[in-house]
Amino acid sequence: MSLAHRWRLLRSTNWLMTAAILALVSIGILFIYSACFVRDDRPMRDLYQRQIYWAVAGFGAYLFFALTDYRHWRRWAWAAYAGSLVLLVVVLVVGTKIYGARRWLMVGPIGLQPSEIAKLAVVFVLARRLSRPGENLGHLQPLMEVLALVGVPCLLIMKEPDLGSALVLAPVTLAMMFVAGVPYRVLGLMGLTGVAVAALVLATMFLPQAIGVSEAHQQTMMKAVGLSAYHRDRVMTFLDADRDPLGAGWNKRQSEIAVGSGGLSGKGYLKGTQNVLGFLPRSVAPTDFIFSVIAEEKGFVGSVTVLGLFAVVLVCGIRAALMAQDRLGRLLCTGVVTMLFIHVFINTAMTVGLVPITGIPLPLLSYGGSFMMVVMSALGMVQSVYVRSQRTGLSFEQGVLGYAV
Image (cartoon, rainbow, N blue to C red; front, side, top):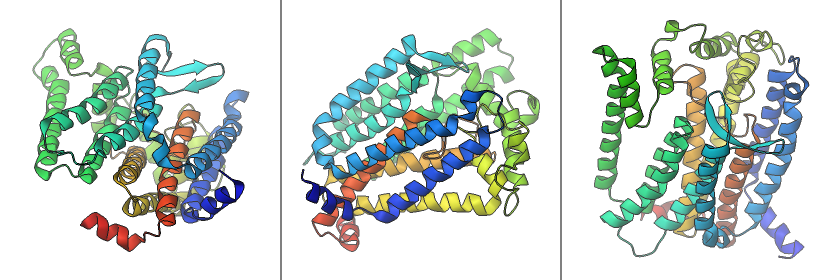
């Protein structure tokens, strides 16, 4: 590809989306610094510097995937999927155990989180599988194939355990199946099945305890549905944080205090008392609870600004999906946008106590190299779809009408 051709492609990109991404990354670096600057240990205080390195590398990946035709990656979809499964197996065997979960592979000083890689690999392999021409997606065989493609990595991720990451794949799959043209009756049946499974899981968590079943038998029953006492405690803490205010309920309560105390305009940058004084745990403030730090220091205005920037990125992604010139591009954008939306929704909702605490990071803001690279690569692919639709001259209105038809 010549330099002139790359320049033409670059000029065709959605610069509003790129600007919103860069703004979110910059905000993330600033508040990772805020979450860590009072620490005594030097490695934690320097997290923001490492995030800068990951942001630069991530932006390089973003440009690389944006300038590369996304259709060229179709042939690598199965290899990427298989590779992600291998990593998920390896992390269960030799992964580093942190906070009771075996989710990280250490490559020298770099921690790799295979579950984040697996999410994008699943999106890409589903986009390829569901984009086969002339296939009736209402038949049992293709549906079972799709569910198997999602089910295998879900089970491996839950073994870590990382229930939050596994659950992200469910709405992503449903959204992609909807866009691919799976009949409504099938999607409705899958939705009802999901509700039934959720009811079974909740019953397994709480009913045996209510009727006096021994703890050993309770754990056996929960293990049968892929859960542990850890998951039950998370849900019970969400329902009643006062049952363990100094233990499992601490993070939830301190996050709510941080967000609520920010008021309209916040306490000021580097002046959030919940964060600075360590009430909001410093081990999670720059990662899962970065939104709490932002809300405390910049208040409602800062929170809405961040959510507005996310809205810009998501709307641009939806626009790219509607303008895509083929089913592969449309499905790829749908999967990425849904994945990011679920991450943003769950992360921000858990900081204000609307959903149980899960280890779901906030895209582009939370500290983490693996997630930064995955998110930036995924958004680069969305940008690639948009660029190719621009070069064919397809308008947004034509994309909407074409999708409706």
